[in-house]
Image (cartoon, rainbow, N blue to C red):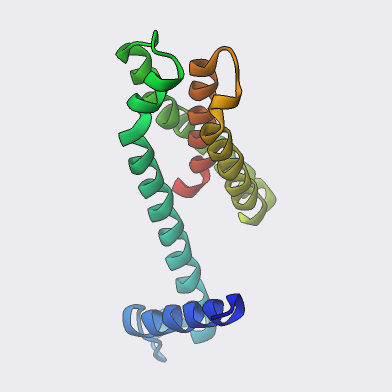
Length: 159
């Protein structure tokens, strides 16, 4: 199956899900602010954001289980206390930068650029985390920094 047909199947499944799950359009007073098509597009955006949030949370959970073995392999002298810092770096970055990235999106009037830049940062930080073995020194600090930037990148998804 080609990539284009995979994308088409995905779009069809999303449309079916929206038709089943999203609030139905009617000619009531409450729907004068948007058309049925605008409402459908809005719900599609909401479902895509929820799916993205799910994937990032899943990624955080999967990575969390492997932090200690990976840290122990990179730097056997690093203790469990430092592991706590590594685990806490992600939520700290998310907490600090979520309001800033939200403000940036509000100031621009669109969340497209902040969302795309945060997804690019997530990709780069995750790649850096996976390649920590190429660094000769300060590996545990590189790990801390990579996890912090993963948290910074996930800040936009909460806004």
